[in-house]
Amino acid sequence: MHPKAKTSAIMALTLTTAATNAFLSTTNTNSKVKLPITGFGNTHILPPFQTVSTPATTRLYNAEDDDAQDSEIERLKRMAAKLRSEAAALEADKAKKLAEAAENAFRKFDANSDGEVTVEELKAGLEKALKTEISEKRVKELMEVFDKSGDGALQIDEFATVDKFRNQLENLAREEKRLAAEAEKEAKLEKEKALLAEARMNFLNEKEPTGTDKLVSILPYLFPLMDGLQYGRFLLGADDAGANPLVIALAVLYSLYRSIPFSGFVAFFALNTLSGNPSINRLVRFNMQQAIFIDIALLFPSLILGVGGLVLGNVTGGVTQLAGELFSDVIFGTLVLTLGYCVVTSLLGKEPDSIPIISDAVKDRMPTIDMFDDNGMFVPREFRKKDDDDDDKKSDK
Image (cartoon, rainbow, N blue to C red; front, side, top):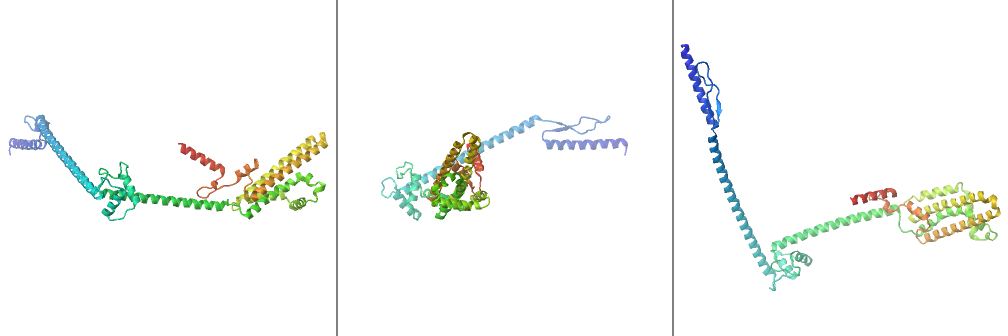
């Protein structure tokens, strides 16, 4: 083929291909056309094409879409209004039927046709309609729910359908079951608390003292009595005291007490250990602790006598001796009165807790039921007070 003819064929093929692409592109975009803008040599060749927008066509399509959307919105609004109207009509029809049913039921329940339904008429009507026996208590509860006027009877405007009465009866039954379950749960908790309190009581033994407990509870006071006999040596050593049986008994007990090595320390540790045993009756434990405190208190008069003798012994001579004897007699007399009060009160089954300072100190050392937590664990007084303070702070917040 001649070169010029060959070139012409190629150009024709190129033009045909470019035209086809421009047509396809315009068809796909609906708003764009392809135009050639460059050439090659002396011969114009169509290269890749640029896009040209057509705003008029786009505005036309947008206007049509807006009209279609407005029409759809109006249609939906009309449909919603129609549905609301139908729903309102159904509700009105339902209310009308319920009112008619309530009015028919009212006429049936109002046996004497006096225009109101009493408790007795309500009970009879419901038992007939529901074919079951209903307690008068439950009917009165039902009356309280529907009797808006509070006159003890139901008028036509207060009356309801049998179905509403049935539903309310079911609600009352469920509420009664719930309350019964709560009461049962509360009773169970109270029973558990009672058992725990009883276990604490058995563990701590704060029961009423028996006759044996009362007798045993006075024995610890022999400890301060033996140590306090030194203050009664002037009274008990008098010429006419030797024939007194009580003095003789005290002398025998004192001899036995002193025959035991370190008797004072032995008695102190024995009483202190036994008073910490919670299984021993509280009265016995209290007297053990109080006997220890009384014995400790006897040390102070000894110190006073010793210091007084050293300071005034060389100055006043016989006067100091007379004052020492009088002081010892007073201390011994006070001791006897104190121990007598403790013995008599204990034999009556009561705690001798009226001794100034000493009884208060003993009470602080005595464990009580409230010192144990809900799990039965012992909580010391200082920690228990701290926990109470923390609880108070939380409640204030």
